[in-house]
Image 1: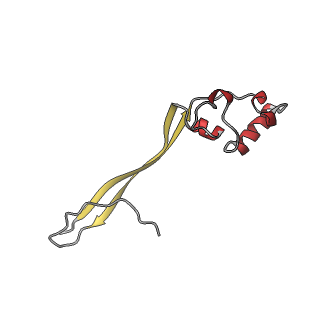
Image 2: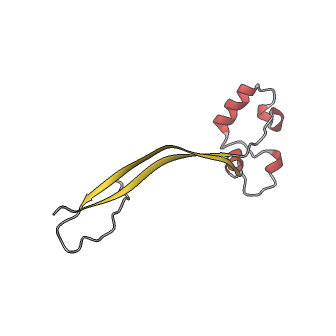
Image 3: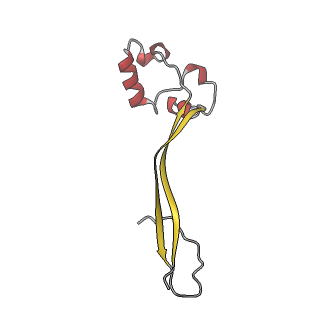
Amino acid sequence: MAKIKVCMCESYTTITAKEWVEIDTDMYEETKGMSTEELRDYIQENCTEIKPTPSSRNMGWLSTLSDELDGMDIINDKIKNEDHWLEFEDVSECEDCDEDFDVSEEEE
């Protein structure tokens, strides 16, 4: 007689969009006179160093624009790249074969 354990596993990517924060070049001394493209590049490269927007600076826990963006409410989320597969484990011929299947993987 053959005996196995089987479980369904799944993986997916969750994409979450948060509320928009409006930024113009006059908000920061270092961004004055920048074009839209320059402003995008600057924010992309320096988001973790830039101070929060002036309207959010009174919130004590915000130290950077990145903190502000991360703290915004979720407005949309989507699951992509969903995948399902089966995992199998051989069950030995012993009497103590009722242990739960562990899907966690140990890091090497």
